[in-house]
Length: 200
Image (tube, rainbow, N blue to C red; front, side, top):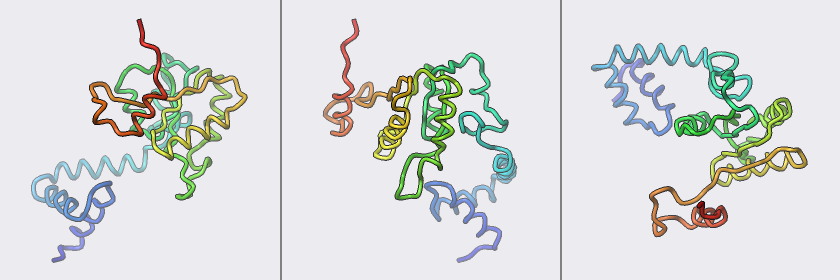
């Protein structure tokens, strides 16, 4: 049964969100219309403002509403260390951990030739220019441990071959509190390859 065109349009609009199918979109739409209208108005205003005003930082490509984001403008950040991540959510995860105090570069994706995503689409040239301009001493490749993430990390490392930049990769392996019997073979292989001496 079809609803009014306005309700149908609301449901279809909500389906653009990841993981939201027809039933979930209907449930969201009905909730907003039945008892969440003030929240719906606030949501629509926030969406409208964000879609028109949020841009990419000129320096790191992260989401920002100013030409340069707050992290890049912070003089307390160590500019000699640059961490490369695939997405703003990866940057947020590192920031929430609270230990890293360097700068970032957000690729907004990874290399995927089959999907037509090459070095130009993720800003590799901008990354290389920034490394040169800021005399970066250490580049941390924090791309995801997927086939595409590994390929992206290796491509960046190859492009920096011969430059005086220390290239490091985030350790991959067994999570704290994990048990070997439940770890998949791929993760276990990475853990063995990344082993290091036991600290005193």
